[in-house]
Each structure stands twice: as C-alpha cells, then as structure tokens.
Image (cartoon, rainbow, N blue to C red; front, side, top):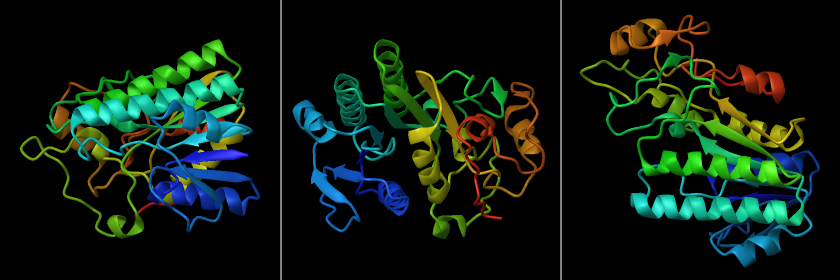
Length: 276
C-alpha cells in the first residue's frame, strides 16, 4: 500500500489517480475532505504524530505532499511551523514503522526564491542538485529542513528517501498565457520562476520515485525543458546577472535554468509536456 498525503490538492489528485491507474493500492489522506478520490480516503492532520503513525501502519511507501504549498499562502511562521512539523511526523513514523520509501515534495524555491527578484544570484546555471540550497524565506527554508530530516532518517534507518525539487506547477491554462515578458534588471523575476513544472510530469516523477533504485537518500530537480520566455536563456542571464554567474552546458536556446539530467538518468523520468 502507498499512502499519499496532500491528496486533496491539485497535484495530489493526479498522483492518486496515476497510482490507481497502475493498479497500486492507495490510501489517500489530507486535512481537507476529498471523498471523491478513486481510493480509500482518511482525513488526517499531519501535525498529529499519533494520527500519522496510524495511517502509515501497513504501508510500504508514502508520497508526502501535505504542506502549505508556497511562500505567500500564510504567515511565514505558520508556514515554517506547519511544514516542518508535518515532515518530521511523516518521515519519523515512516522510519519507525519500517516503510521502504519516502517520496518528499521539496521545492526549487529552496534554492533561492525571494520577493526581490534581484536577491538570489546563483553560483552557476543551469541549477542542479550540487548547487547549495540558499533559501531567502521560511517556505524555502522549510523545504531545506525537510530534506535534512529525510537525510537523517535515511542514515539511521533502512527507509530510503527521495526528495523532488520542482518549481511552480503550471496547469495547461496557465501555460497558455506563456510566453511571459523576459525579466530585466529594472523588472526582475526571481530566478526559479523563470522555470516551471507541468503537473502531469511532476505526478509521473512522484510515482516513478516510489520504486526507483536508490541507496539511502537522493534529491532531484524537476522542471520542463524550456523557460517561460521566447528569448535565448543565455542572453537573459547575461542581461540580468552580467558576469556574476558561471554559464555551464545546457542553456542553449530557450532552455530551462534548471537541469533535470539526474532525474532523467536515475528515475527514468522524461518531461513530456512543454508550452511550446
């Protein structure tokens, strides 16, 4: 059985449906009612450690998406407290109960989203998993802490953990509004917003991560192949950052500033959708 937290969300619903379509036994949970899901549903507040332990009993894996999904949805203190508490309860219970795998919804925002588009200056582009996480605000910090919790339980228990760092999930109707005007120093847009993720491809990555062959802990960046803009990515980078950012291979044309090479290599994931 695979438990899916945050199952009432727009991404959680897709993950539940995809698992069911592939004949996996699913227990869906959320703090909101979602009785219309195609799987057994149990309402649960993930901040309740006992309740979390109860829903994970008998599971082989958990896809953990239950969180406040973004830096602007709540007061920063509420976001950090909620997300870290939920992550700790889910991952600790998974380890204590001997689950084989935790798939954690991290975020590319942990790399450096900020209200000020000029705040985050990456060391190099495209961003990959070797680039340090450099959060500027509590939501991104909560994702960094969540990943650290995952690393801890992967070190001290047989439970393995996959963290998926995806950026803004743009539904097809949002992608229909692309291209956006390219960011400029006068009208900046924080770097990880240059990229976007398609809900269908992110759901596929969540499901693939359940059975991927990994040892202990791995993190993966997820994004669509291209940016939100028509202009060449290297030109936009140079216009916004000058010579402050090292440009590496993989930024030809309108390529995304996020590299998904590792996810493609280790998860067998292929982003199939692009607004173009």
